[in-house]
Length: 393
Image (cartoon, rainbow, N blue to C red; front, side, top):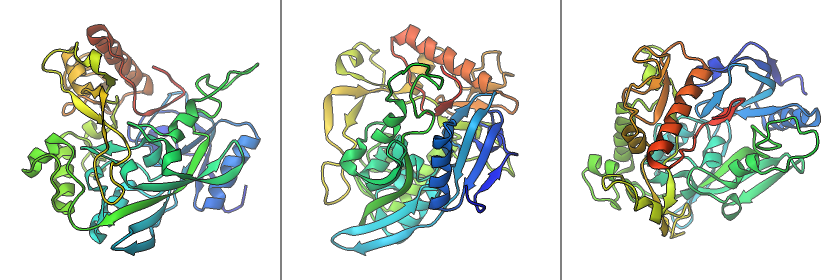
């Protein structure tokens, strides 16, 4: 490891994550260059040490016991404009450590279209394609051209195309590479995958491709359309979309906390469960009032400008928040009552929050109770969205 790579021992996961829970870190490294990042990853793998590469810690729940391995935090920043013209649009290259919302701000300022509805989502550029982040009818897969990665399996850099990335609802080939495994003799790591908790493919940088313009991509989410006073599918000024999205997210406590004015509804990992995508036949068995949304391909139908993906008629997406509430878990619910250290947010049913003194196990207990309650009521098992490190639901 180079002298320039900073190896620190002070932080805990409670310091580094938006849930503000989690134990100690055996070895902590902040990588300020690509060479440092790759070297830290390779050194950990060569030594057969557990490895966790992280960004802002906004989509992560780590056990109270901490992590007995190497944590590498990518702190690189910068936006490089590769090309921009009326025909090809704008192509930018951004390192994985850069804050994703800063990319959204830059896109709106420069007339790059396609990420305006992602405003306010915490996290870094590196995490965005892994999770295929999305909100209010828009997903990052609609503007990703390619992702350059460090392949831990082959110890080399690779550039993955849009097709190779295999985007789906809150997933990608990158995310799935954490989970694919064969259990071998004497397996000692978490049985979910040999690479766990970091994918085989570590994101180094992302190339985005945007259409140029001041009008947004088509508005794909009814709640956002209502706030803007337009029909679904309409386009409006991108800046207006950002303003509306930030208002909606703020009202739900789904923005980063302001240290000057702490808000425990924002001490969360955002949406803790993904919205279930279920067969159309199963959706037909839900109560009449259950939300039903079309499931679209992560890839846009058109390659000449922003468009919504094709609808898959065999699948239906329903609302995890609706299921949770109808299963008896209202806003503010806590296992031990209103004073519980971990509760459902008082403003948004999908967020599980730390009220100031919660442990990781408090969050896990609450998540388990909600998951099991929804299974009992509706026969649908909710899937957690955050990366779970050292603990399982």
